[in-house]
Length: 407
View 1 (tube, rainbow, N blue to C red):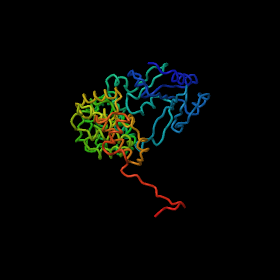
View 2 (cartoon, one colour):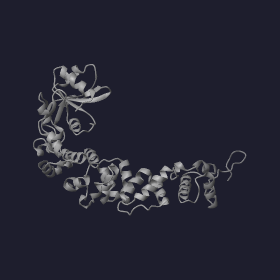
View 3 (cartoon, one colour):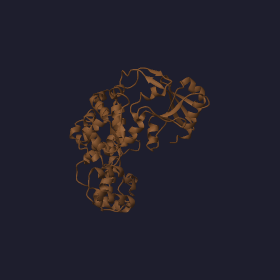
View 4 (cartoon, one colour):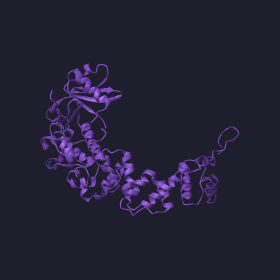
């Protein structure tokens, strides 16, 4: 197992100053799994004042000095370094009321959520594992450190974190940990919707997530209304795309209720916007394998949403192949690709919304094959239908020689 150069330098600098230092938590877990960690956290017995002395020549950010955390910027990359800690009581179910610095690594590791995250590593000492985390990694098990009910009471979001790790890594949740999560699921009502949303967004793209949610419907029922009515089997094989999978999870609610639920979970307006058409198309038959139909849908929804709908509407493989061919041949299905522009209509006296209406009419006529994508062909199309002159052009009042308006 090899740590990045910057992490090794930080650990070495602390060790050279007489302190212990280890990479800890998720980065060690991922390295043992052969994955590339998203970031690296470092734990040490040095307190913040001592860290400042060790890294006096580096840029230091007082990220959470009160809780023993400083961020050292090494090679332009920020690394959090935290003093070994022993937490006090968790009266708010999220953060400890007090933090006591410790000189023992074990004190720091025993306060962590799951055994697979209670790991430490340095080149000097190798892997430090007090709670069987390596064995659980090999067995594909998510197990709480110590007493599960205590870990979930300290921070009830850990209930969802257990499910998220199970989904992302394809692990199973150890029986006592799973039982405690179920018994304490009502604590999720005390967790901010933003934190629930963040965990759900990561979880939803995991392995076999349909089976996982089905197994733990009672927990997900805390924030997914009427989940007993949800058809979850399709989540397993759906593309690992957050929008598509959210649409499948909430489709049983219908578009309006699903969007309201997403907003209550603090999802962005953009997420609701992209999810809504997928929910509207859920349960419909396959998209017709017709070039005109496909181009009309590409025009209405755009490329990305079209292919998501093709996945939602099972059996739409041929339609998706037609769409790929349309895109590959750069055929016109958007106003942006249309040769006839709004300036042509402006010069003819058109104003306001009718310009957009005429352009959309031309685009759809071209998609149906009724005119070519040229200015001349589209102008002729409008002329033949009496649509080349404005329906009404406001005239300015005529003025007399003195400049006054004539009555």
